[in-house]
Amino acid sequence: MTKGAGLAVEACAKVNLFLHLLGKRPDGYHDILSLAQSVSLADRIEIVPAARGLRLEVLGDAAIPTGPENLVMRAAVRLLGDDPSPGAILRVFKQIPHGAGLGGGSSDAAAALLGIDRIFGLGLEREELQRHAAALGSDVPFFLSGGTAFLEGRGTDLRPIDDLPAREVLILDPGVPLATSAVYAQVQEPLTLAVEPGRIPGFGRTPQDPSSWVRLGNDLESLAARLCPRIPVMRSWLLENGAPAAAMSGSGSAVFGLFDGEDEARAAAARAAQEGFRVLRCRTRRRGEIEAGRFSPSSSTQAS
Image (cartoon, rainbow, N blue to C red; front, side):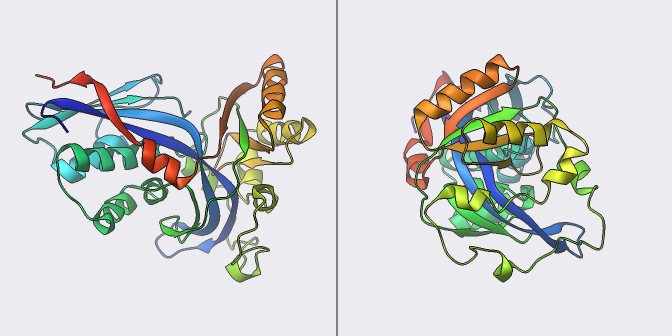
């Protein structure tokens, strides 16, 4: 990286092809089993060298805080300290809606870890980056590589699998951000839907049809629907309009449908927009695609 040049890092969203709750942990989190899949919907993080300190700017979503609670800022502080010299300006260009279960904040944090390591030449081993990522949040380790992976434990234990066949993805966003903590607060203990991973159909094998995983469902959907009743409406709409499979992603509130072809997805997206849904059309992303296109030069240069 040329001295003084900025670095741009792509931060892809994800959908959870399925998500099962397995029980509550002693630390208060819930054990889960999920299959996460990267998609082409992405934020962009620009890291611009500065003389001293850290500053975060978020463009495209005024509701996202820019203080020390932001995961991008927390990632930067973990690697550089809270008043480094030299420092950096971090600019987040948002495309992924927040509070939608698409992992935008976690993906941004992972991109910040990778970008800071690269632009400052820290030379961190992958194991150390994974440790920082797990400390930041449950989904963050997945986004260091992306692709397709089982998430276990509280979501930080990864088991990557071979890329599934590409699919078009249509995401419907109700515009009602849901806090993960608020959705999990709806869980009644003891957890009546707890199951053992080995008893989940398909666990331990990798069927080639992504829709077969989506049909396993999301245990959080009925809980999130108490807070956002449009969730089941959107899932039904997708199934009625050509999606072979549809589900809520993560803890909501966005719902996604998989489509076999671009024409079908485009037609459904047009109908959804006419009916007043907020529509985000993208496709699944392979791990190699993400790695190849993750970094690019920033349009910004060194800040004073």
